[in-house]
Image 1 (tube, rainbow, N blue to C red):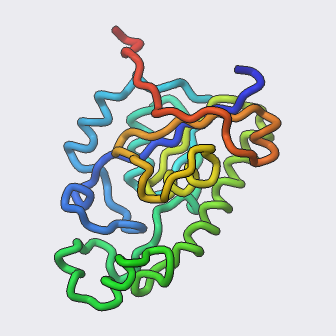
Image 2: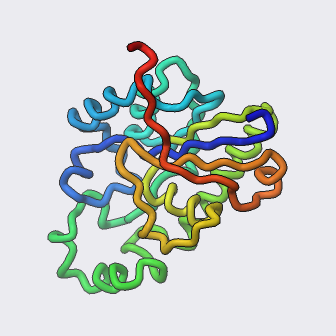
Length: 208
């Protein structure tokens, strides 16, 4: 593995708003009790990491501390979820009567939520955040990395680097789960597509 860079892209645990199917892009919600409980089951069962990066939002920071309690967590603001503007904290049922919402739902890759980010703005921001991660990996010469972030961010990164071409919303990213992406070091440096992609492996607990 010395010639490879392995990045595990993990989605944060559930929040109360997630359980209610509400939009919470930049809303700084903590994990729900059930979200924390689900993550505790995974503690000690995920791949080891030389570096742990995270969105700076609370739900990701809490997820990182539960899953990797002994690791320093590097917060990256640019790895936040899309900003949903005036629709933050609201559900489909609360928004379905708004014309601009229906227009966005029908074509989320054009326009933007009221007072929020367009898809293009979101992508450019995530690119900037991933460059920070990449620079740190190359500077420190590490091979095994975890990024704890949001569903939209993971879908964008998979759409960018995976050799498997899927529509954005076809990528399945469960809460507390994600995908492990592997490059050769040269391929990673040159921002090539990855050479391997799989669900993040869940191992038997090291504690027995």
